[in-house]
Length: 293
Image (cartoon, rainbow, N blue to C red; front, side, top):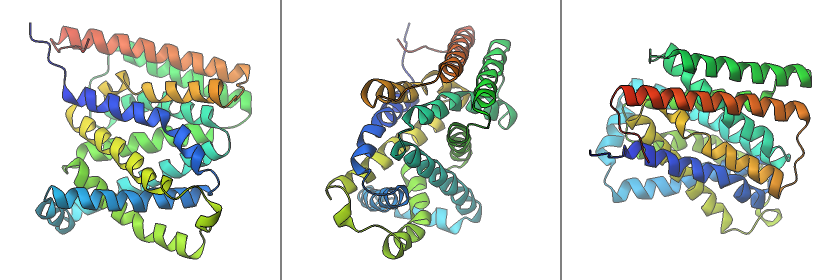
């Protein structure tokens, strides 16, 4: 039997593996404050995407997007969501909270399940419902133990979940959509660097700054391509690659110490993800969908 793997799955794996190792790169930029790093990521991404779009001759498609009010509004919304996500993530890395950031991306697959079910009317089975409820208990327990809402994890989870939802329902190419998003964010980014940013003399070696654009644009292109090819709920099968790698970096490399309540919340969410993965796999097999080896 032909067991062809959906290319969207491969795009998703590549995207999440890159994101999982991204903290190691962002640590090298730490001499710069978070808003400066964000601005550089946006501007260098814009340059890279502009060159790529020119080489691939995407001019007509870009003109169509600019001339279509609904597309511009959708991409403006997605640009704001991804900008918030990037900024909060960089702040977490700069403040030695890689584990908190990873928790946000452990929660994110279950957020995608909720959004896919509520907004896109994707069918959710009993097993998936159990997974979502269990993850919600994990977040609630963490909030109770810490005496407040876990702002960083929830902001990362919902901002990226909503970003994926907007991009999934917006009929634009991955490169074109990201180019327009970064163009929307470019002017405020440039203004920040010119009037409020830190001198480059106080920052990292300059070759790292263009690399920030490459490591920003590439996984987002892969993610957008994946989101267009697979169900939003199916992304939950591979999304935990990134937070797993991030958590390994936080504990094994950067020496972050997690409180027992944090480990308990992680455990509940890991169990929820495992339950969801089993449920999604069984559902796919019943539907006759090929499962990657």
